[in-house]
Image 1 (cartoon, rainbow, N blue to C red):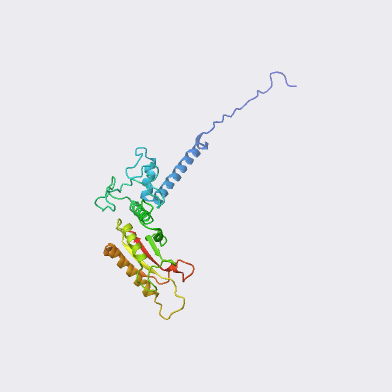
Image 2: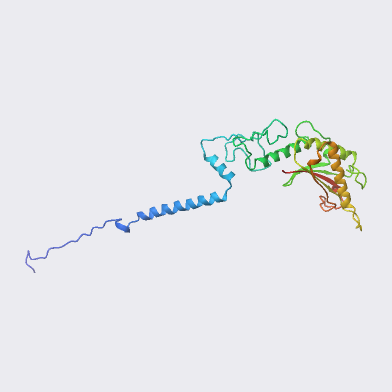
Length: 279
């Protein structure tokens, strides 16, 4: 047993640990993540700028701009599209294109701030003009201009080509006498009525003649010449009713190549299509 006082002293070594020192810390990871996020947002912004049109970017800028609550050339709304609609069949008032005349010229239209029509506004104005013609033609804009008998022979539709006014025959209401090209009194009345409806607009006009199929196969099919002759007779009726000849862009006959009824020989296929062409 060792004598007291001869024991070796105990030595305790304490190691000091400093957290986050030098390049072994984790703060750089947070900074790097922020940098990567910022770069991703930047490239996403560049892609969006390249994928959108000038009008879409202007709409987004107006939506987030608190200094312009309502655009002067709008329908009065403060939304992303300035009161306009993404649907071409919808229309709004006060689009900055008003004028006193029924069909204003380029010189007397109200253009808004820039003095020029914005992209897409001219197409919307034309669609509105087609809607006005349809309302006038079908008697929806006040006093009816047509009788019930005439309404049974007229349908309208808007296509990429323009406003199509289809005048078709029925079993008890033919448009031409017999199998010839002489127009009936009914067709003459319908042409006068259509003329009153399309006079306020200045779109050019195309006239197309269509016929039903023949019951037998003929060596010489007269439908081509007859449909063309009928279209020309309708052209003459429009000119006599007051339509300027310069507005007539084309007159064509389609024979029985564009049928609308399932039965090729149905009288419903005998028709004249008057098209207000888009500008």
